[in-house]
Length: 208
Image (tube, rainbow, N blue to C red):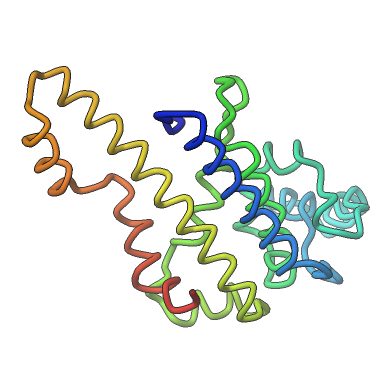
């Protein structure tokens, strides 16, 4: 689902915000390398319980030197990869996944949808209340990179809440409620992405 805009200026401002966030991610993570960390295709083999030889063969497929050059189709069709990367691999690939997410989240082609959209958000919100888990996962991130990642999550949370609010308002309006009643119900509404909002407020907010 996509946000509905009341006028062209709102859409222009929204797209400009996405572009600014992409630039922020690019600058914050520029120069991050994978080194000897787990690579994308290698992680897919790990997920399939592949042998060391199969891992080496898969790793050889990841030839790019910069995360900015990771092919978009590799990201789109590898939603489970982030679960099987080590700290170096996660540090290297997360910015690529976040940028891909921003570039494609508003794609209206139903055939383009990918589970990778949900996977990116999941890996920023899962078990953030467990200190050892989250500390290890983001152990290589600089303060600037953590700040940028928090901005990315904030953007997604606010986007999802806006869409849900618009859908609810449209549904209530069709039911014949007054605008005053609709406004009151929207104020009391519990958003479906409450887990993401909770992760943002309880963990990621500290880096902003």
